[in-house]
Image (cartoon, rainbow, N blue to C red; front, side, top):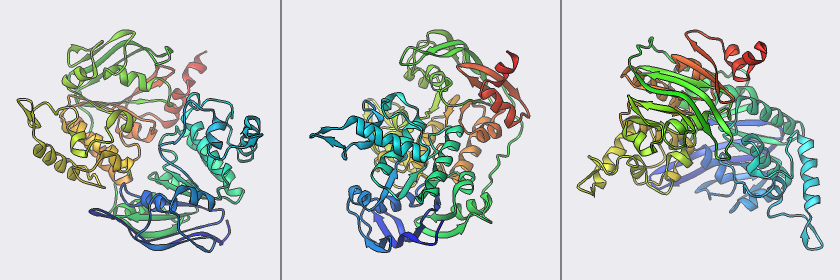
Length: 507
């Protein structure tokens, strides 16, 4: 890393109706460094990067790239200046190949036609140079989420990016894929590329960043070197107070079985069996955590329990009522709350307002409606209460859900599902995209809901979250329960079972 500044942002200001997103923010990046941008949901990180990438125009301040004044009115202009951005939600076309996605808009031509072999060769060259192992001929719809992210990085590198903005790059990755991403980032650094790493995960920032800038409520709080920084000091700077990084809870007092699945077999959309004879129980007043590497049947298991996926065989019972072939609506009506793993596809209608999204399940019931009439005022009042309780930032009851940051969308879904007073709460990746303060709040809330007598089924790729919240842990491997634990268990033991270790050692 050199001392040469390739980016300077000075006194950046950006206001939206009712909120100042960036208030005199300053930020710079040196050549060959990873500079992490930390902050709570709604702190102004994405707004600052959208200004840099030409998606927003700043109200004030200046930007200098390689020492020269710059002002971008579109992403194309930012790309031409050597800036690339990998968004949290990828922007790829599933029906096209990896190579076609990468060269889209800047296609190599041969005799006025697309030079497919030339495109594939160029993609292979860049891929090998930076350790981005990906097949140029594969369809995007057939590759993993981690590989899709590599395609997005390749798109930026193909266009000559010297500065890469990675927005929450590990939010959708497994721990193994996150480790591979860090190796790629180090390879990019060695080549002289600079990285802006936007994240909520303090441990990752301390592992990968050279310097760390913290934003809080639109203002720059501090820029510090990684050396000497701790999770506690960064959390305090982000939130403005000491944050409890470890969950405190009393022993569970399990009651009646509220959720039971017996010998479940479930196929995915392609007809492949993903859940293979799973049986489990969740009692009132306990949290049962499901650990496993992504893609081992978690999604299909949740969808089967919540009525979103057809069950091939086996049964699901909710509070004594069999729900095996019922709809998602029937599950909700029986008292199931569901924080889905994909908040945008399964949790929200992005075009609807915050108030409308909160009322999605119960719009036809009191107090939101009576005799077929909706009462928008009551919906608005409920939304105001939940916005305040769950600290949803970036708008009010009438704000479209799609205008909120990813973390605030997650808070909105969690607020709606918990407020419905469910008997059973299915929480799938409940803290995905949340900052440390919001994670602390939601973890406390889940423990409080457990203590009220709810049965909570927690599915998370974050092993720390599973270990700290769960009263019992089930390990899912290739669609089967590979282990069950109550009380103290080591991370190594769970990790071994997540990879089928017990099965291999027994073989």
